[in-house]
Image 1 (cartoon, rainbow, N blue to C red):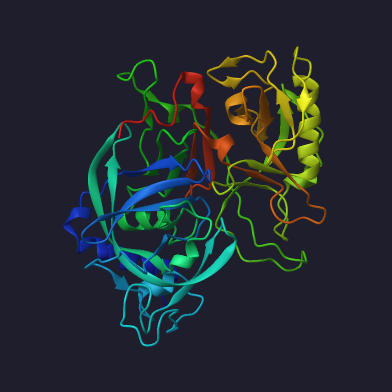
Image 2 (image 1 turned 180 degrees about the horizontal axis):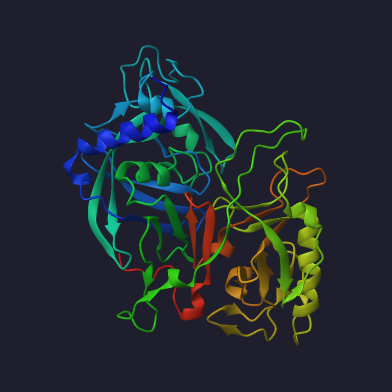
Length: 450
């Protein structure tokens, strides 16, 4: 008989796991988690129930992360916890870096405990906020999420034998205070969206949608699976708007680790990539080196969507072209002048008589146009382009990176530009859907009924 692929092993394993727990037989079509914004780090966080008994754990959100990982060193006591033993299906599908390593950074001969077990495999994980790589132990436990019909949260659904990894306290460097680890939402089979889809079967689509909040005082939401996305406008909490009916679509691309030679292709990345063809300021295209927008075998170029960076990062020539066009338009406005930079931004302005509306400061519109689809245009208004630094000064909320030889994606669309937009990633269809700002309909990401 032919050998099973890692994906088939994973699907069989997690499907059998579902049968062992009656709470999963309802097979919801969609699940959700809340999103908050940390005021200090500007990281986006979510809270997930884990273990037996179920305990709330907080995780920083990494849209392109490999998998869920958390610190297991202390405060984690669960009767349903199991280590990922070498040779197990859970170990196989994680593609372990060190398949069978008994290594523990604790006093000699400690008793077995979460994150420290003999004959268990270890995987390479990342802390993208600190920039370090972690070698951590594979584990399994029960998690619980709220179901949803797209209008409000529903009953909790328990998911047994969910694969994650156990880290140590030192691995939390630069992650928001109070977070227990990172939730990885990447495109791989042990990323959060794919594990849930494999568990619940065909009716549960391999889709992820995120709606990031704009302040630390309100919640956003993320959806797994397929459902309407009904929000209410601020002026009428009894009215329902299915914002997903406004979706525009563009293709998702595969990209690879950066390499020195175009003859050598690096490992496939798990993040979400799209192709931009032009950028407009007040509907006028800015000059661009279009080769920077293409994907190359070296892993350089193209556009990435990320929740790790709080602001969109642009390759230096793209940033300079954007600012030149933006300055030309904004400085036409009476009493608006350019002022000294305010870190981390380099281009700042007096507010003058810009005015304020539901769409934020009245500044020039920035539009992102996606490939082969003139209708797929992401409009960025003041609420998603400007950061108010004081009563008198606001800065353009984009960052410039110098990239003479190329260091990765030419454009990384970050948190500020994603806030109060609903963005969906359809992994099965390899496409991204987006709504443009919900503020146009007086809706915010916080306007979902939990």
